[in-house]
Length: 191
Image 1 (cartoon, one colour):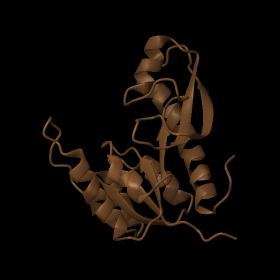
Image 2 (image 1 turned 135 degrees about the vertical axis):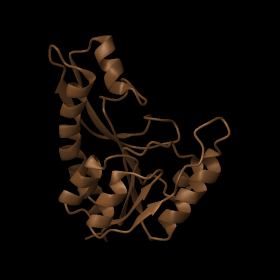
Image 3 (image 1 turned 30 degrees about the horizontal axis):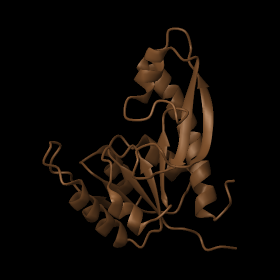
């Protein structure tokens, strides 16, 4: 049997995806956040090392490559070999893909390749689709373009708001993402 992979989680917000991963008892080695957030508190409460690699700029002067090097350095301190993006709000640059090739996993609230980017749920509602969903994929330098590992459909109901639809998508995400990560951690083939 292959050696289990060591998992890092990148988070930015409330940490509900992180909590689902913690509840699934995945071997999380470190949680890294780009801003002070509840996810860091969840990690500390679970006894998992947490690092804040704070993003200092949100403007045109933001040095994405330098920031990515800082995140990679934080990850390297914890000897990880698989990364789960869990609502991480900063798009990372090439150095993370160089350091962890094919090992950065993301979850996205649509059935990719439809509705890429930060406003997928709003765009799905505005477009009037009857079905959207959740995708787990390998992250690449191109946002929401990487190979799809798993998808599950979520119906759009009459009267749905962005909040109600997003919550149903998150329910699927909190079930599907840990399952996919468990398979990757254990070295199982997802094909």
